[in-house]
Length: 405
Image (cartoon, rainbow, N blue to C red; front, side, top):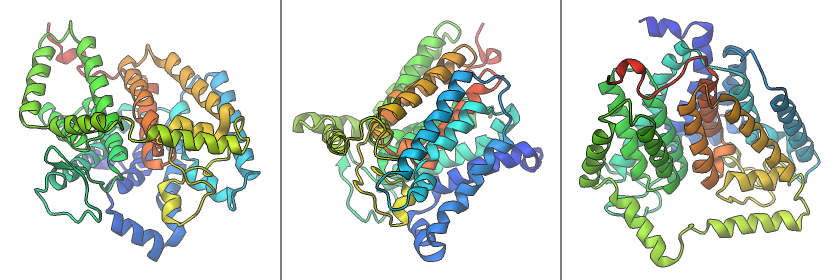
């Protein structure tokens, strides 16, 4: 009851403004979502969930000390991106900004605001619900335990069909699922419930049969194993038993079979190298290497696609850094890299585990997926992690009270 009352406080309303849009985009069935976009509210549906996101900076506490270099680079980056798109070939530059430039709002929230411990406690049920709903789709539909109309037949790997979900295609949904699974580790829930949610989410990630979300889980698991090797003496035992059980249950079979097929076919990168080259060639032809083609002029976010908007190139380089380079040029990419480097360096002592978590996201899912820097359901999830890093509270997977002596 006290938790429900917490949602009626200023901090609780901030949580609702942040999490309701994300949860709706993670869990709303695509058919219903499409009807809302096209039949009911038209393009105005874009703004219904996203308006709530605009209020989040007002409802989360600001950090006291801001790095001036970070502020300067952020302001220059945003202004340059807006100016470039206003003078680009886009038929609707304002629309491009409002439906493709969620990264600016998410970084503003994540760089300059923080989460209180009470807010994190209120966020936890949303993260758990999203993780379980997405994971069960991949587990139940992917294994055909529950009938599901795929629209297009998904490919079978080791007895698991690679499907899309309400959170999007397998790779993108896997990214959300992996981040939610790892965030749950840091939530103050009863251990049995918490680790059950984490286990379901982890199995769901492996059933996406997507390499980058799985790589994120593996990197974080290895980091935690070595980080706690002295204080949690049984952690290696539990890890080995857990891997053995999952392997025996066939959880790893789909990704191993898919990987083998790719190696045999000589298509290890799933044509991502071709997509990157096509994108860069287009930028070169347009002589837009320095400042880019403009936000939304290379790749359309989900919101834009539903609104049936066309873009000049409509490419998907499957790499958010290449997308930043294409749409905002070397200048925009440089600004974002500097902003994130400052953030990582400033906070690596305060919350080292979450910093490692964020770093692994930057080198896995953002490196291999385009939508992670365009769609609000991704970038605001990463902003949540950044706000937790900014908190005065030190987040640990195994707090000192639970450590063995």
